[in-house]
Every structure is written in C-alpha cells, then in structure tokens.
Image (cartoon, rainbow, N blue to C red):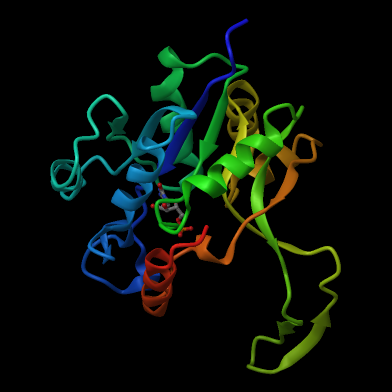
Length: 233
Ligand code: C5P
C-alpha cells in the first residue's frame, strides 16, 4: 500500500492592510528573513511533507528575491502566481494548481503565511493526530481570557461564556477532494474548517501553541520574533 502523502499549501496573496506597512506583511522581516520564508523553510525541511505550494498575487514583486535569498528551495516548493481577491479564492487557486500531483484522498495542510512561528514539531503533532481521521482538523488554542462583546460605542454589551471556545490557528488539514468540494460550495469563509463545517462535518481540534500566533498588527512582529528566537516547540 502506498503511504498517505501530505502537501502544504500557503495562501500568501494578502495585502496585510492592518499592518500599515509599505510591503505585504508576509514579506516583513523577522529574525533575519521574511515571514513567508520562515514558513517555506519549515515545510521544505520536513520529511513528512511531499511538496509545498505557495500562492502569491499575480503582480507580486517580492517573491523572486525571497526564493533566491537563502538555501535553495528548488524541487521542494512551487510558487503559484494566481492569488485571488479573498483567502478562500487564493486557496482554491492553489488547490487547482496542485491537481496534477495529488489524489483526492491525500492530505493538504493549509497554513497562513502570516504565522511564521509554526515549528516542524507542531506540524507533526497535527499530522499524527489526524492521519487516520475521517474528517481532518486544525490546530487551535482554548480561550483563556474572559470574553466581552462590545456595544459598538466602547462599552461592554455582554460577557460571552468562554466554555468550549477555541481560537482557530493553522495549519488546517483536510483531504484534497473534501477540501476542494467544501471551498467550492462555501460562501465567503475565513478558514477552511468553516467550509468543512458547512457540509455538516466536525473537524477535530488539535492543541496548537501561542508561538503560532498570526501576525496582524505591528506589535505582533516583535512577539513573533521572540518566539522564533526561543528554542522550544
Ligand atoms: O489577512 P489575513 O491575515 O486573514 O490572511 C491570512 C492569510 O491569507 C495570509 O497568509 C494572506 O496572505 C492570505 N491571503 C491570500 N489571499 C487573499 C487574502 C489573504 O492568500 N486575497
């Protein structure tokens, strides 16, 4: 029997408006290299990952330098220059480009370019937890803060019970055929798991790590850098 294969898909076609920076946030440098390069190096260095695809915008002017600077990623990473208007569309375009290399029952790990703190150890934890799962799932963290809903005018409207609430991270890992069907059928979604849930399925929650934070605001860069410089998974 051929062992199951795992592919990484990195949507990296966003503009990162909330960072307020000159370049898209996936190219912001931390700990010596762009965020996207951290992510590509992590997946390219993993024996468990057969191949990695990254989706960038059609007129992206940064990706060639990123691929040139540093150890060669040739043969391990394919750049798909076909980003969409939304994350969902970028992921779908990536899935389309992967089609010749992947079978419907093989696994795709979709990971944000803006989460440079993912370690190989965390990605392996996800694969080990899900390789025999019928649905698939995602890294996520239980919510520890007390949650408040705003009234829209800077005051508390209500306290939201946090029981059972988790914050979704990536990678989100699903079989190719199911993921493509779910995203094609979905209305706009902010992650892959939501599209799978819309089919009535229940993705598994696998404990992630604070180091796998999403860099969204300028202060997040410094925090992500601290985690990257620390040795622990
Ligand atoms: O903007 P946000 O942080 O939610 O983006 C999450 C990921 O989706 C980032 O890696 C971003 O580059 C990617 N994205 C994309 N195409 C878009 C919008 C976002 O690939 N149109």
